[in-house]
Length: 198
Image (cartoon, rainbow, N blue to C red):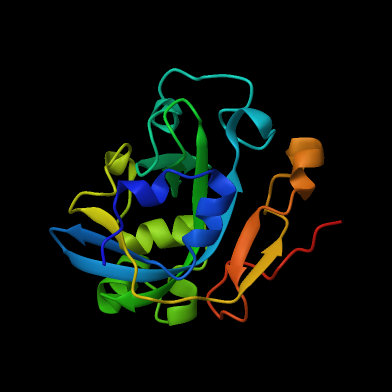
C-alpha cells in the first residue's frame, strides 16, 4: 500500500520510528530501485541544535521543511554527497527525518552499477551511499512523496526498533546526545553500529 499524505503529518520523532520497515521506491528513466528503510534520524527543527532550521529560516535550502509533511528535503554534504530527508508534521513545523540506510529490495543490479559496488550490505549503508544507489539527487528537492517518481510503500513489516544517539553531530552540544536515531535491530545494512545515549 502506498503511503498517503496523512502518514507524514506527525512529529519528526514519531515519523522516524514509523518509517522503519517501509519501502522507498525510486522510478527513473534508468529503471526502478527499491529499499527497505532500516535506519533513520529525527531532526526537530527550531528545538534541535543539530537541525538546519534551528533558530532560523534560511532562504532556499530549508524552505521545503516549512511545508506539510511528505516532501523530499535533499541537500549536499562535503560538496559531493546528497542526503535525503522526509519532511514531517504540519506546515510551519520544520521537522524532518534523515534516511540513513536501506536494505536493497529491488533494482539491485542498477544500484551496483551506480555505486560500483558488489556487496549488497554496502550499497545503501549511509545517507550518501543510498542516494547514489537510488538515483536521488538535488533535482528531487521538494519532490512530493505522494507522487510517482519517489514514494513509499507499507508492505506490512513491523520491525524490532533500537534507539540510539545520532551520528556525526558533535557540534550540536547537548542535542548530540538526544536518542533520536532509530534502527531495525540486528540489520546487516546499517551505516554504523548503535550509539547508546550517554
